[in-house]
Image 1: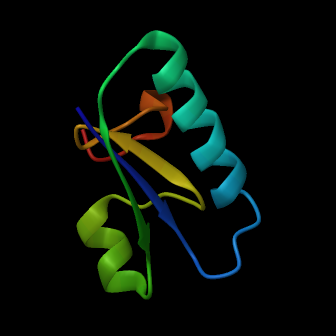
Image 2 (image 1 turned 30 degrees about the vertical axis):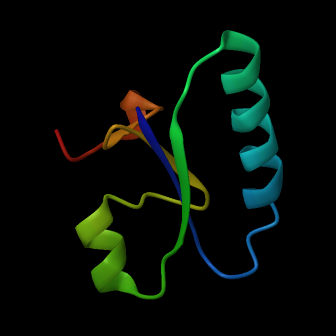
Length: 71
C-alpha cells in the first residue's frame, strides 16, 4: 500500500494528518509506504488529483471518494 499526503506550503493540517495515519497503520498492523508531497502550483495540483490541503491518497485514490472528481 502506498499512501501520499499532498499539501500546500504552510498547511497546518499536514503534520496532524501524518501522525493520525502513522498511528492508524501501526494499530492495524498495516505495512505501508507513506510519502509527503508539497504541491507547488496548479499544474502539479491537476496532475496529482490535488483537491485541497491536505489531500490523502491511498494507492492513488482519494480517501474521501465523494470529493474525488477524477472518476
